[in-house]
Image 1 (cartoon, rainbow, N blue to C red):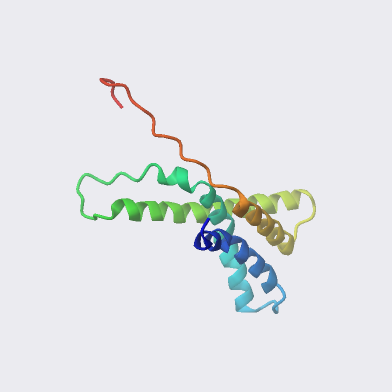
Image 2 (spheres, one colour):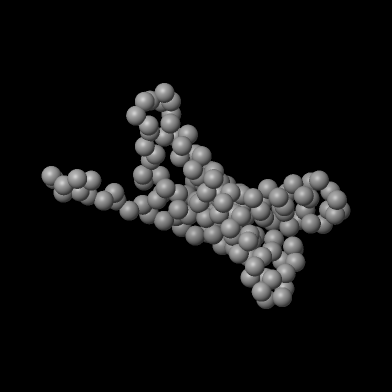
Length: 142
């Protein structure tokens, strides 16, 4: 693993620990709100999408029939990952908050701490290997 890959891998957990550190700022601080909001919107999802990255890259987007944009596949894949990051982050936040509510232990700080720990653990997970594309027999329709 190169140093650049390590830095990219550790950005989401670093954002979580930074958001936890921002909780020491005054309650109405815009910096505190921004750090927490950015981490909750993208941190956990970015760590999970990084794990599944090779599987996502194995099947690129199919462009429409008329090729107006030569970089359609690259832009489409980037948009797909961005949306996955946001939606997975929101889903993980909701699940973590629901579990803490059910356990009668809910607080914003506990949710943030739990998500930071989970994001850190996900950053240490190895990426999944991409499975080969399915083969079709000669003469059969795909």
